[in-house]
Length: 244
Image (tube, helix red, strand yellow):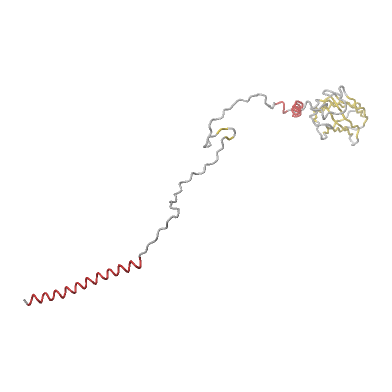
């Protein structure tokens, strides 16, 4: 009986101790939770839209398309710039196109003259005021002791492709001279006696008769004669130099 009472007394003593310990642990946990909650936790208020409508998410914008011409070089193109239909090659409507012939290389002046004659056949503004000679023109007779003469000539009217040949005693010494606005010069040796020098019009150019101005010098630089001619095609201007 004494032992039982002693056991109960001991149990009550330890039970009180355990109860106090349990109560202390619960209180410590509660206080720790309150401290953590008061010091480390907070809420962020939500921002409300005043309009009350959500902002739409922009969709992907379409890529800018390059400007593709509807046609290029006379060809039709589609929206991707591709050829709609292939071009058809056609034969030329006219066969009247210019072809350079081999003989044209031999005389460029003749080719130029033919073109100008066809293009400007009706032009009259550059015609000489003097009447054209329809027969041979006599330029006079002169005496000189020179061994040779220098002849200079040029077109004194509109440069239209006039050409002449030079003959001495009816023999051709210069087959063709194309008269321009610049002086052309050449030398002719003189034989004792009569030397008939002839300028023969090979054409009339594009604006009228064959016109030219000329000067003849002896071998000392003295002027023997200076004159002009105004000839139709095939007509000659003649002068005589008598070598003494």
